[in-house]
Length: 138
Image (cartoon, rainbow, N blue to C red; front, side):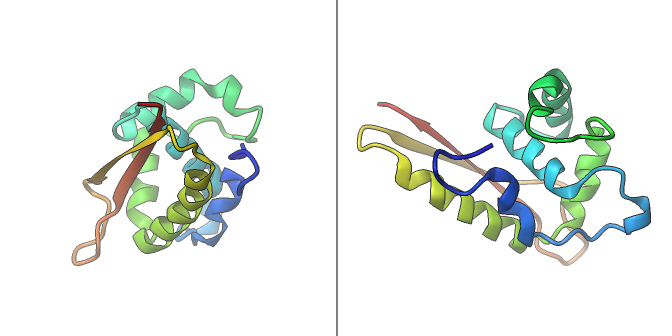
């Protein structure tokens, strides 16, 4: 999954540390993040919708990702997003968006939507903020 000459979506997430215990990991973190971003860009709003979208698009996703153990359930997506560092995720996402936005023509408009994910942080920690950007012609 490339962004037309920019950074590959798979490569964006390399700097996001996986806080899970290695012995208990069934789903690759980078693959989960790619699936989640693709689902949100396709209109998914929450972890249940991410799971549903990904299961419907499994054959397409497997053209780009191994997904050795299939699609994680919505609870797994929720636990992983609650555990990762929101600042690392945000920095990686902004790097990717920074590569995508300059490729837009002058006639295209970028609509940006943001939200804070519930149950995405530990007590006293910064919650995960999600941003979606949609490019369209006016």
